[in-house]
Length: 339
Image (tube, rainbow, N blue to C red):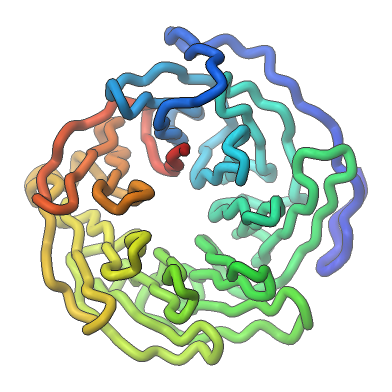
């Protein structure tokens, strides 16, 4: 395989990796043309990918994935899901209907991909934490797949956000305590700013005007101007805010506070925490280990992965109550919803 050069096409990586694995004790879902609402969960301890029917709350399919899978992203047409294989060097692509692996795209030595975005353009973006970089994967489902690598130069470039026009990407850099802006058109030098202790969660507001970051080590959230990378607001949150997610309506941002078992609800207009939603009690938080959070498309529900108990909590946003806990694979972390 050709070696990957920074800022160059790495070569054609069109080898298909067709999986011949059998489902793990679960029946495969039907093959109807319209898929009912489904939740996809990557299990980092079990090394599996699960599909949960949100109408029934039942896990309908579980398949082997890759070593220590983390974040997920679904294709614009909903037919595939891409998985960042943090324990290895690849981004693997699966069919959403059958969870059959159809392709494995290698990012090179020591890549450790973690954050992932499947852009509306069809390109995939992924952080390569071990290489201190971001990859753009062009034509991920074609025989002419091409890789472009962009250096961040920072330790632990972990999660990312990408602008709608694909000109800019931003990473949270755990080891460097920074957030980095990467210009993906002009290739100007990356711009990094210090943001709290151990910044990890990141989300771009729906209007693209604000970059939201959560820093787990300092129990804070930050609002930044994404163009000039200037912090405009600093907000105290619950303890150990691993993730931050903006409601599709843009009115609130929510942090996933692992040590409290709670969600801190930030009014994006005034930059203050206005509600705290208890997903579990502080006494339960250590065992549940709440990590990734995900909004439903209509903003009525929040899904919180509880990696310690192999569950996903479904939270009604209006009432702040947990409506049910969905079972998935061992150590569920990354999530995506279709449609």
